[in-house]
Length: 292
Image: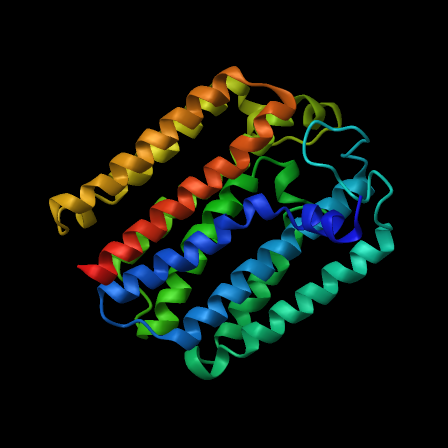
């Protein structure tokens, strides 16, 4: 296997639309409110994607160190576990990527103020705390809360603030929670697939705690709750725009039906489909706001 492909798998490209979707949604809201600005939008995009890659790298490294991964796992190939990447190399690359992420974050300070340093430190700590530290969130059923917060609420509200100067808008906040719930579903699919392996190594994800039946119900509910949260937005757009949530829910329900019937490696494509459905929704909403 080529080195580039190994590192691409380590970065988990099929999940990166989760971080992209948050920035796209915030930019769409900024367009809607006539406050869109290119420079903070690009900085937020780079920061969000790199922060997720850091989290993915750290997850692979620290899961390996804890013995949570094993060779031949049903999920995507883990380079460190399979011996394709040296653990120390991955650790160095993880912290180098974190440093680059922080450097980009510092470029936001002239736009948003020095208080963003505290926000950046907070994000950096939790990017690692998802899998590392004395109380890794993903091992104690808190990974879903972290995703809701750091892939929905924080990036959307922060991206919008850096473009508009407004720290809180109710419709932006509702969008951030909705997108966060969509992002949680990507994690649900991942942990749904890995439930047996996670239970075996003592990794108590929410799926391990609830079981697959409840987890699949949560997956379905998250998508519908996300659309319900956006009712204040739907009441302010044209009837044509209502095609977007209908399309999202149609695709969402189709993926859920497959989630209930598939097992093991067959679930891997649903990760990409869930994240792409989320990204498609935010892109279509943004296109609507641009052309409305």
